[in-house]
Image 1: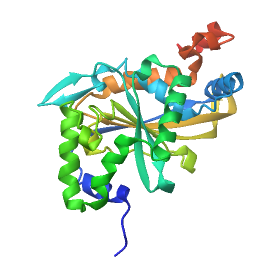
Image 2 (image 1 turned 45 degrees about the vertical axis):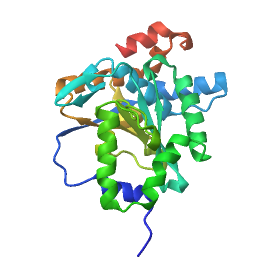
Image 3 (image 1 turned 135 degrees about the horizontal axis):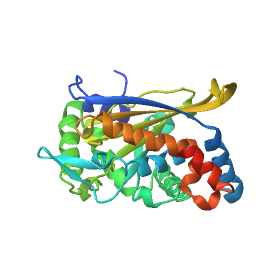
Image 4 (image 1 turned 180 degrees about the vertical axis):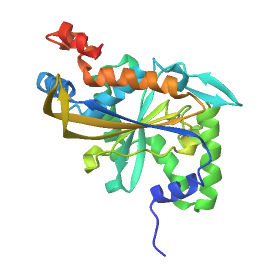
Length: 277
């Protein structure tokens, strides 16, 4: 019998037949200013910021427009989180395992701060120096999948719904925050949808696709426009289409005009602001 990776064991233990309502959405934006902004920050700081870093900042800002997504459901009631935290997924072991890297207070941090924090967290994880992650992996190595399923459900309920930390297992309270962000564009996929992870109890999953040039009409002129596609999977218990639309509109405005995130970086802010309105 072939040996299963920890990631595959956890996947088998986590999902069963779908029975929850989700909202699936896709946003395709003009990436012209986005690419200029990222290149400007790279040239100015020497920091290799990426589209995924920017999307994390944008998601955190957009959650202010949809506060119903920034919280948890406990005993049938919505309880808001005190901070806006987002989580990135980090590939380990040549893609055979995944780890989380949570950015706390992401709405209060710049894209550069988020990039620095994520880089430090990812480096610690890949070097095997993250004690909490190592503690969570030890039981999974030896337990069969039929025992992992109730374990991760219980741990997820205690940490993500009740807000308890479980130090013996290296689990912090609200370990995933309110949104999980990952990218498939770097793997050559144009777009995709992230499946909700039951034990994470996160209402929002964002998948970053690839930038592709596509024909588009701008001011009645056909141009070859760079476009970015991001997709979202949203727990319908938290919001309906109206609130999801507010989230999407704010995200689009910031992605198409990221200079609004940091007015000091824009050499021509008035013109940029008009575009984002």
